[in-house]
Length: 188
Image (cartoon, rainbow, N blue to C red; front, side):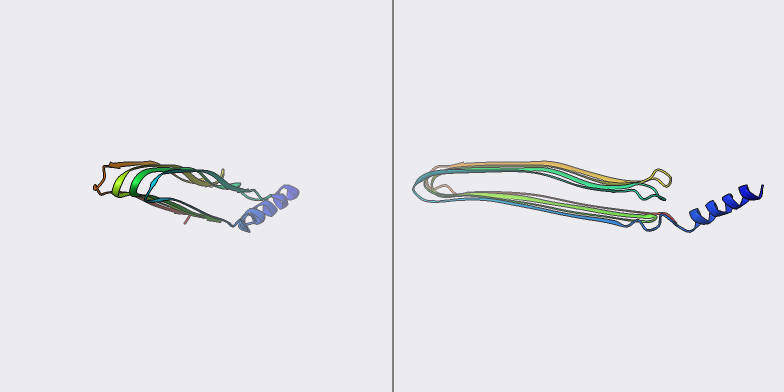
């Protein structure tokens, strides 16, 4: 009986001491893409394409505490083309993603920001421009299984624009998207 009581007291002291309380994780991710085409007269054509996949993840499990994970996955693409005959034609695309995840005992914080924009322009002579941007971003984190805490955010989007004009015509096409998420959890 005395041995059982001593073992129980040691276990209670060990759990009560916050033996798993040394878990601290932080993950930052920043992604930026720019794509630009400019035709400045004469007969010419140009195109540009970019694709990027990012998988940023971390996991921690200490001997005395719950496992924890953080991840950010992004798949983004940009494509632009321009064609002109004595015209001024331009394509400008920009995309930015910022993710922050932080975990410490009894608390989680997660933010995700996405900004996407593109602009097409045509002036003077004959010209055309096309542009497409796509993105899928997934961010999440969890601590568990004893004191389960989960946070997830997913953003999917696409932009598409096109312009065509005869000599003397002027056109501008602008598009933008912005998303911001924030999550916070704490055990009281």
